Length: 142
Image 1 (spheres, rainbow, N blue to C red):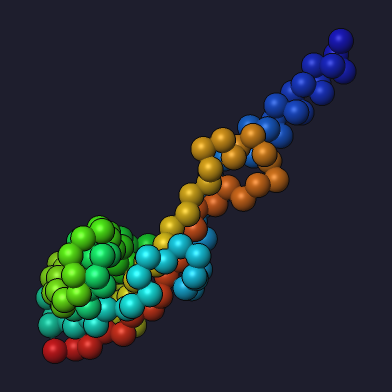
Image 2: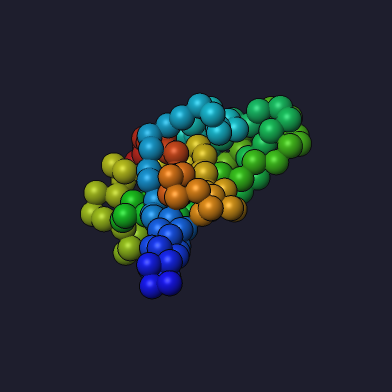
């Protein structure tokens, strides 16, 4: 009986440890999850970013949110299916105080994200990391 409880305990610890969120992995660029492969032009005037996007017919950029990860700025685009081809400008304000000194050399466009599947914790050998796929942006100073 004691050995049976020990085996159950070991199995339980193994299963529960496999469901733990293991962190975030950042990867440079990818093909499988990208909606739009065009990278925008980004300008910085000392206060905010001006992002000029050439829209694609049927899949337009509607919103850009900012994320700060490891002291660098990530721009997260939200696409919607509508509109035609045109150029659109977005202005982004962000908290520069939370960024590293060299932030303007490390600004990224998020081309995709993936998260562990809802029941992936049942498989202890499966990848339990969140992944961010990114493309480095060149900042043009105004």
